[in-house]
Length: 370
Image (cartoon, rainbow, N blue to C red; front, side, top):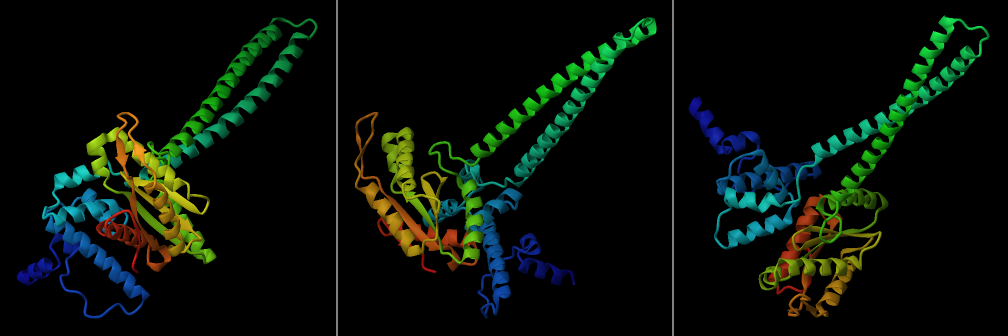
């Protein structure tokens, strides 16, 4: 019995099999019969790919590695997926050190805990503001009433020493009340300043510091919202990935500062076709992602190709050295979001089309086949 248990455990991929990440080297004999089966099959396939990636590269089964692998194979981090594909094509293995370095500057991370903390802080500030405002109002009203009674006590004819003492005591309380009111007003001002700083920090967390464009974190939120809205309105929705061609050569030849300027030039070029229905973000490094609401993939491809042609016609010069950059171009891939089961699959399809454009010679836009 113990031997049978060990065999079944090994067949499922050891601890990965127990966790549901077991490998399945053979494809299922029958295709999923319905939507629920297809969804289950897709999840199983995702787990198989994650498990195979970790096992084949002898990576530890840690929370960080599982999260990174999920981002790679769920289509959430196509840039890293492409880097891994290139590494494998060169016959190299993904080591833990390489993976740690590759994800060290990765902006994709689980911000749910931070978001919850910020929300709690915002609620705390709001509650504090309401409390201080109520307390200040009550203190002010109490102070005015107390001041009136003090004046009345002092105005009593023939007041004896007891009334005089009461009047002095009341006046001391009035001074304390006024001081408390001033402190509460100051606390309100501090709470308002803290709320403004918190709002600014939240906006800064969603902006790419170099280009001023939204970053990947902000884009993912826009994508999910636009996906729901476009689906409800029965409108087309297209997504595209763009990647600057031969960017490493620019950095190697002209330096990273010049490379940053090239990134900004491409960002401005793409921003020219951006509007309320076309959202652009810097996805990381030299890569950009765009979402076209109300545009079919064909229309989105044409818009992106126009921007590509506009950039390719320019002749840029390194202002610091006066050396020409030569022709600066980018490649792109476009996908129909509603042509796939999830937004992650649509992103992966657009990235695959981008890779095809690179393989076909760069400086072109390709449509995802799906």
